[in-house]
Image (tube, rainbow, N blue to C red):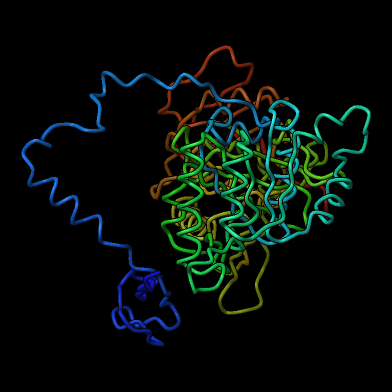
Length: 473
């Protein structure tokens, strides 16, 4: 057996070196050189011989696009409507789905519950775990209520197979012989290819293992759910090529000390990106949130100064979010500005517009702005709600709790149009809101059931907010 030749590739810039150095010679980063095998070039000589042979001219494996039949196999449901939404309408057979998230956020819980749901409809589901033993997985499944009723779930248990293994060759052997319709790999950083001398989780190991799993999944039409660890910066650990190899990349987000979790799509070859699914962590595991807007809305019956409601859109899903602001005198030369769940630079811009265009002096006040429930709202459509909550807090006023604010605030104090206005207004009407302050330049929607007030300037929005002085000291 010939010796495997290797080279060293920088995981930061991709430069190659025949020897290992503590620092990359190109980008100057320390500790980023990873050992990788050099592919065999024996096949290149045969390709050159075929190229020089005139009789081999013509298509061998390619087909005209008109002769290729469309995909006849429809998507199938994962058992969770929130996951199906993020995937673009369901699971595509033979696709690779990469799910990343912080430790303890619930990635393994989500996929174990999904595997249980799939086992109720499909004949063979394989759950591969490199981090837990079979007994530990069984204990976690019992805690989640999977397989407790033997009388009713005996067939389900026979359809769900558990494989505690880290060796790639063993996993591929099981996939080829079991031929499951779907499989879970938890996690890709624990899978190890014996022919590589580098440690599990290294750039070379992650890339080669994912590539081998992809080839098997595409050939045998197996849907793969792959768990990926994340770095301290929040990116999926391993080479960037890992995200290019898979079909869908999902991020499982949220504060593990809070109850709700957000499943966000950042790449999807079979659907739209920036869709979100919302789950809640309960004692029996993850549970879908049917009405996410109620999760991020406070008590509208209790009047609170500095509160405004906006309608944010995550993909095609409108979510009503309550924004809270606190404006107070500062005892320091430089006032403090703080945001939770909002873009800090957008807050600085809105504060400058309020001071310049509206005449509200905020240079001697601390300003704190947050979104209820911890959801992140980054789109400009929330600008009007942020501005109105700051104005109400600075004047100690309470705005109508049944009013929503939708619009982007320009540097000149204008209220600019936002996308998907009709979708946002319908969601607000469904949850019992009665008034909506929206941009004037946008076409208004009829028959929604809301009193729609169109404004062109921020001063007009303040005058129509129906703010009243707070009686709370």
